[in-house]
Image (cartoon, rainbow, N blue to C red):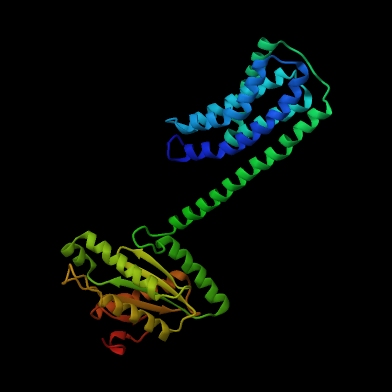
Length: 357
């Protein structure tokens, strides 16, 4: 929170505009209340400083601090102290006093909750005591029409400004929450769904297929001899191969298809609304695109894929059963010599033969 370029500085910026508006229109309320008391000239100078110059001074003070968040909390306590000072200076005129103190308390609630409210209350009492020592005590219970009208901008415009700042903050927090949610579901290396997020998606698709009796196919994809690639060319190249495959998946799959990194060098895809033939064609295009990849700096690097496919059918007991069938098809493809596609049902279909290079 105290980082100069982090949340502390953003907190300072959020307070700046409400303070300008609040102290600027609060100046009218206080001026209308102290004018009948014929205060000394220094009170008018202090009032003008507090209402017009202090917001900008406070902003620069906190902005240039090594701990902006703490500096802004200090500024808020000074606001409370000055608010208490002005309530005593205007002899606790009811309407301006309630207006000023309630706006200060609203600031403290929004900025720091219960603890900040308690500290602000102490600062207000200190400000009242200071004004009483300098100006004497008094009690003015009658409010003039001018004082009432002078309080109206504070009672209307300032809550509107503070509400707008809170609304903007809520929008930002919601956006950050969406981003964090997306990051928690994304594999950092490939940008695809991670293992857990893809398994959650598989459960949803399985339930949808059961309810709607809709076709769907899942694919498990394994990079052949990936360990050899890592051992021969290094893990940096291995990571590049993983990113290359994820990029091909994102380019070649439809918008509704869900691709994820299942773990290590295994990838997984849900193909909703897809027949077995369509799934075979899509995966064969992927296999051919990956096989044709060449890196000019690594002419000996070759990439091939083994792919296991499993179509949804009512006899599947669970998403895990569905996935297990695709896993068996994948290992069947690997046992048959790799670089091919196999379906989960009884016939061992090597689509490398159906779609020759």
